[in-house]
Amino acid sequence: MSMMEDFFTREKANEGIKVPLTLPDGSQSEHYIVVRGIDSDAFRDAETLAKRNAMAFAVIEDEAKRAEAFADERLGLIAALVADWSFDEPCELETVKKFLHQAPQICEQIDKVAAKRALFFAKGLSSSPTTPKASSN
Image 1 (cartoon, helix red, strand yellow):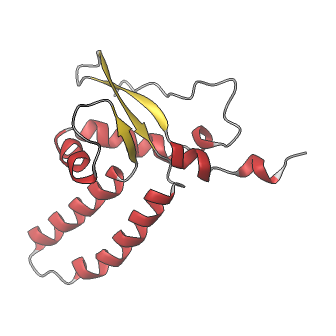
Image 2 (cartoon, one colour; image 1 turned 90 degrees about the vertical axis):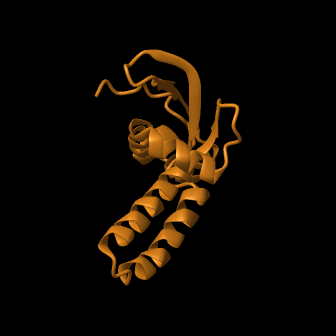
Image 3 (cartoon, rainbow, N blue to C red; image 1 turned 180 degrees about the vertical axis):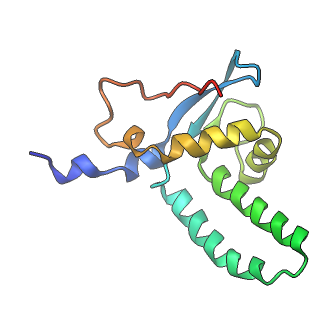
Protein backbone atom coordinates (compact mmCIF):
# COMPACT_ATOMS: atom_id res chain seq x y z
CA MET A 1 0.00 0.00 0.00
CA SER A 2 1.30 3.45 -0.87
CA MET A 3 2.14 5.95 1.80
CA MET A 4 1.45 9.66 1.38
CA GLU A 5 5.19 10.24 1.10
CA ASP A 6 5.29 8.10 -2.04
CA PHE A 7 3.65 10.99 -3.89
CA PHE A 8 5.95 13.75 -2.67
CA THR A 9 8.03 15.53 -5.31
CA ARG A 10 8.68 18.96 -3.76
CA GLU A 11 11.81 18.21 -1.71
CA LYS A 12 13.60 16.38 -4.53
CA ALA A 13 12.41 19.05 -7.00
CA ASN A 14 14.03 21.71 -4.80
CA GLU A 15 17.29 19.74 -4.61
CA GLY A 16 17.39 19.17 -8.34
CA ILE A 17 19.18 16.52 -10.36
CA LYS A 18 22.55 16.69 -12.06
CA VAL A 19 22.30 16.68 -15.85
CA PRO A 20 25.44 16.33 -18.00
CA LEU A 21 25.77 18.80 -20.85
CA THR A 22 26.72 17.73 -24.33
CA LEU A 23 28.19 20.01 -26.94
CA PRO A 24 25.97 20.99 -29.90
CA ASP A 25 27.64 18.27 -32.01
CA GLY A 26 26.51 15.66 -29.46
CA SER A 27 29.93 15.03 -27.93
CA GLN A 28 30.35 14.84 -24.15
CA SER A 29 31.60 17.84 -22.19
CA GLU A 30 32.91 18.11 -18.66
CA HIS A 31 30.05 20.45 -17.73
CA TYR A 32 26.73 19.84 -16.03
CA ILE A 33 23.75 21.71 -14.67
CA VAL A 34 21.59 20.90 -11.68
CA VAL A 35 17.96 21.10 -12.76
CA ARG A 36 15.13 21.68 -10.33
CA GLY A 37 11.73 20.14 -10.97
CA ILE A 38 8.60 22.07 -11.86
CA ASP A 39 7.34 21.38 -8.33
CA SER A 40 10.24 23.34 -6.81
CA ASP A 41 9.59 26.47 -4.78
CA ALA A 42 11.84 28.55 -7.07
CA PHE A 43 9.90 27.55 -10.17
CA ARG A 44 6.51 28.03 -8.51
CA ASP A 45 7.54 31.55 -7.41
CA ALA A 46 8.83 32.39 -10.90
CA GLU A 47 5.64 31.03 -12.45
CA THR A 48 3.47 33.18 -10.19
CA LEU A 49 5.50 36.27 -11.09
CA ALA A 50 5.31 35.41 -14.80
CA LYS A 51 1.51 35.20 -14.62
CA ARG A 52 1.37 38.63 -13.01
CA ASN A 53 3.75 40.05 -15.60
CA ALA A 54 1.72 38.56 -18.46
CA MET A 55 -1.09 41.00 -17.76
CA ALA A 56 1.32 43.93 -18.00
CA PHE A 57 2.88 42.56 -21.19
CA ALA A 58 -0.50 42.10 -22.84
CA VAL A 59 -1.05 45.85 -22.99
CA ILE A 60 2.26 46.56 -24.76
CA GLU A 61 1.15 47.92 -28.12
CA ASP A 62 4.37 47.32 -30.05
CA GLU A 63 4.10 43.70 -31.17
CA ALA A 64 7.89 43.18 -31.30
CA LYS A 65 8.39 44.59 -27.79
CA ARG A 66 5.50 42.51 -26.46
CA ALA A 67 6.93 39.35 -28.01
CA GLU A 68 10.37 40.18 -26.60
CA ALA A 69 8.91 40.68 -23.11
CA PHE A 70 7.13 37.31 -23.23
CA ALA A 71 10.25 35.56 -24.57
CA ASP A 72 12.38 37.05 -21.79
CA GLU A 73 9.81 35.98 -19.21
CA ARG A 74 9.84 32.41 -20.57
CA LEU A 75 13.63 32.41 -20.39
CA GLY A 76 13.37 33.55 -16.77
CA LEU A 77 11.04 30.65 -15.98
CA ILE A 78 13.47 28.12 -17.44
CA ALA A 79 16.42 29.83 -15.73
CA ALA A 80 14.62 29.48 -12.38
CA LEU A 81 14.93 25.73 -12.85
CA VAL A 82 18.75 25.88 -12.79
CA ALA A 83 19.99 25.37 -9.23
CA ASP A 84 23.72 25.07 -9.96
CA TRP A 85 26.23 24.41 -12.71
CA SER A 86 29.86 23.57 -13.34
CA PHE A 87 30.82 26.80 -15.11
CA ASP A 88 33.19 29.30 -13.47
CA GLU A 89 30.58 32.06 -13.66
CA PRO A 90 28.23 32.31 -10.68
CA CYS A 91 24.92 30.53 -11.19
CA GLU A 92 22.76 33.65 -10.93
CA LEU A 93 19.47 34.26 -12.72
CA GLU A 94 20.72 36.85 -15.22
CA THR A 95 23.85 34.84 -16.05
CA VAL A 96 21.77 31.70 -16.54
CA LYS A 97 19.33 33.61 -18.76
CA LYS A 98 22.17 34.89 -20.94
CA PHE A 99 23.58 31.38 -21.25
CA LEU A 100 20.21 29.87 -22.14
CA HIS A 101 19.52 32.60 -24.68
CA GLN A 102 22.70 31.66 -26.52
CA ALA A 103 22.22 27.89 -26.01
CA PRO A 104 18.54 27.23 -26.79
CA GLN A 105 19.17 23.48 -27.01
CA ILE A 106 20.11 23.51 -23.30
CA CYS A 107 17.03 25.59 -22.53
CA GLU A 108 14.88 22.96 -24.23
CA GLN A 109 16.67 20.14 -22.39
CA ILE A 110 16.07 21.81 -19.01
CA ASP A 111 12.40 22.31 -19.81
CA LYS A 112 11.96 18.61 -20.69
CA VAL A 113 13.89 17.26 -17.68
CA ALA A 114 12.16 19.53 -15.16
CA ALA A 115 8.72 18.42 -16.35
CA LYS A 116 9.43 14.71 -15.78
CA ARG A 117 8.04 14.30 -12.28
CA ALA A 118 9.18 10.68 -12.16
CA LEU A 119 12.74 11.97 -11.80
CA PHE A 120 11.78 13.87 -8.66
CA PHE A 121 10.03 11.29 -6.49
CA ALA A 122 11.09 11.53 -2.86
CA LYS A 123 11.98 7.83 -2.82
CA GLY A 124 13.90 8.13 -6.07
CA LEU A 125 13.89 5.59 -8.84
CA SER A 126 16.17 2.83 -7.66
CA SER A 127 16.17 1.00 -10.99
CA SER A 128 16.74 4.12 -13.08
CA PRO A 129 19.63 6.58 -13.21
CA THR A 130 18.90 9.93 -11.63
CA THR A 131 20.72 11.70 -14.42
CA PRO A 132 18.87 11.48 -17.72
CA LYS A 133 20.87 11.20 -20.92
CA ALA A 134 20.71 14.07 -23.39
CA SER A 135 18.45 13.37 -26.29
CA SER A 136 19.95 12.86 -29.71
CA ASN A 137 17.73 15.43 -31.40
